[in-house]
Image (cartoon, rainbow, N blue to C red; front, side, top):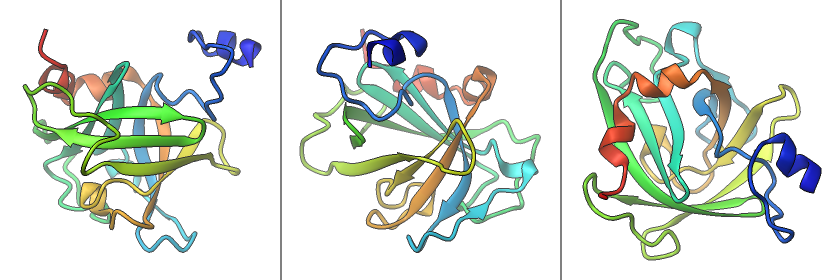
Length: 174
């Protein structure tokens, strides 16, 4: 585990049993399974950066949806759209499980283990390296039912997250 922690350049304690280090990098939805039956639909190239996830602090992440993407199954994204919807979440991470709870931009992060939290199971995609399955996401987020929907997230360049402007929106107040 220590070698794995060194490989990902994160400080892991001896008891840190996280499945993967998804906290590093920018992630986009490359596939989705709204029914939770194991059948993934994949995003078209023109829309594959319209649904973004970025961990920005030790306990805060943002999720961004390009305004041209009305729901996750929409394939009619406008590559030139520069406006984004930002959702801010606090989170905790243990083993292969994350717990997220949404908080309003400008507010202090909420207790991720408190009321309204969603427990998300993480697993590595067996088909493509550096792609992970998150199941489920909070209800309504990228058309999630909050119970069984699953999403394939693929790592992308940092510039994808930077273009959303959501980091400044979701960073906790100093």
